Image: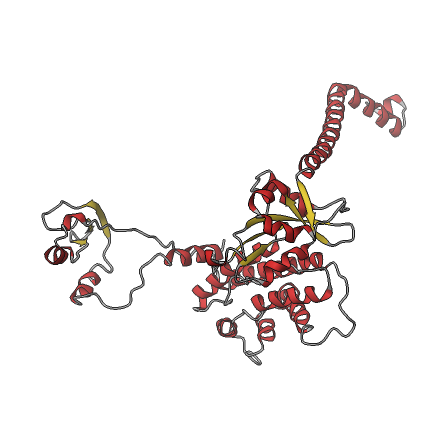
Length: 439
């Protein structure tokens, strides 16, 4: 439209153009409007279904649950020669210790029991017990120990994602539920140690887990400090000073006093990693130091479980950042280091030369050769010879080498009249994959 020919103002022309644009696209606009309405209704429907499902889930599960004070576990904790307790943020497991045997069963009966954790209104945490399993697995003599710790008419927090995760995993059997911080810490420590063991020849951490590391036994300041002590023993006390020295040498960073673990770690870290890695460990060290003195102000009530759960998450984040930094400086993938380390545990431990020793020189002839083909299988049977498998390796230079299993089976036939063909030997094949660089 030409505004000069029609004598119209520019604003009027723009208005006509907009009307024309809308008229041309009315069908499209109506469709988009209809889609928007349908999408809004669908979202409302999903929200309603989610809320109904949560109500049904609670109603479905609640009739099978009873609740107990966490102090009920004290009997099993102090008898750690007979029982062990494995906990995470959603719940735990009570089972017999490795040293348990039937000779102590009268006093310490066999137990294998799962339980959940649920938050109460006062910000403390209690035990949730699925009673059909409890009644089936706990002897009557043990049930009496639990009765005194039963909580009648408990009032729970409205939102408790940890408890919902426990219900999904242990009641409905969903293993898509992510593990909590304590379990993840126990998984990441061997990853870090495998990486440094490969890179500098020393695992950064002495231990992969601490059997005494659990959530605070009660909701007070003293138990909170004790829980931090066990985490300190695993993480800070467990950090090897000579590993930090080796990392410093690799980075050509001089250390002030190598005996001061956390100070040395801070020295080798880039400044932007101090808050992410050093600060949480320093805080843990400060919490641990509180156990040296006496509780001058008395032992006070505290939501120790929730507070310690946050501490675990902080340490987990610290360890993830530490692992990522170590992967960067060594250009190694921690997962592949761990896989190789685990694979090598299946390899034989060579403790001396073969007998006779000339076999060592024979096997060394294959070093540097390129394999063209391999034959592997059961060997032909011979009288007075044990049954066995063998390997024939063919090289690209047209040489070949065989590996067979010999034995003293014929000697046993001569001495004990045991038929050699009754003996069966076989070869086992194990692989240790190559270390990968960080992606």
